[in-house]
Image (cartoon, rainbow, N blue to C red; front, side):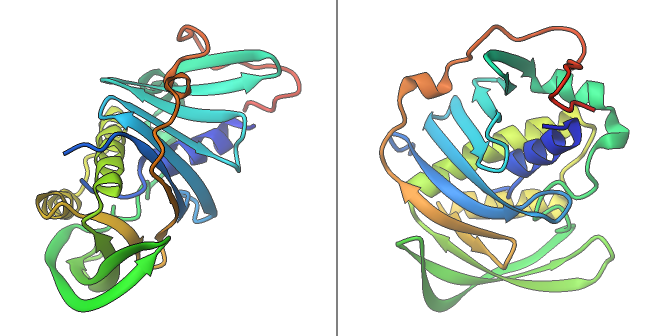
Length: 237
């Protein structure tokens, strides 16, 4: 996997959508887009507020772990696992390499309204309600998007963990989340909502209410120090 591919996976995974009673754990598969606009399918697993794992079939040799206040990129080089602190990885990339559009909601500069339409929509077997989202984007243009949300505890909890991780990574990269995006997060959280669909930017494909095994949240090796490796045959750039 090239470093540029790892960058795309990392930011697509941790900055999907800022959503905010914890369930016993579970997982969800989401279809979204990476910062370069490429479609990507991401799996999110959590056991409690302190343990979150993000992975993608597009990058089977890498995944992300959030363990309490720390997050790690885990990569597999043959039989050798490499664990890198996410903050260290971002620092090595440099702010100039951070994607300009890391999240589907990064263009929500000002939230105007989130209004229920009264229409129902079922996504991935979960009943939800359609909402009309109106906002001002980065070009100061008013936009409108249809989102589908549900008062489903599992989706709400997964979203909250993901938002915490994405916010922490964004701040490490020197990126301040837009005020409108943060306000949308607070409003969804106050209503106990989790997203099922956000226009054509994000869609939940599958929900599994089985708690993942504890081993899914264990680091395979101690976090490494120093520079990202340059190993023959692995294409790290």
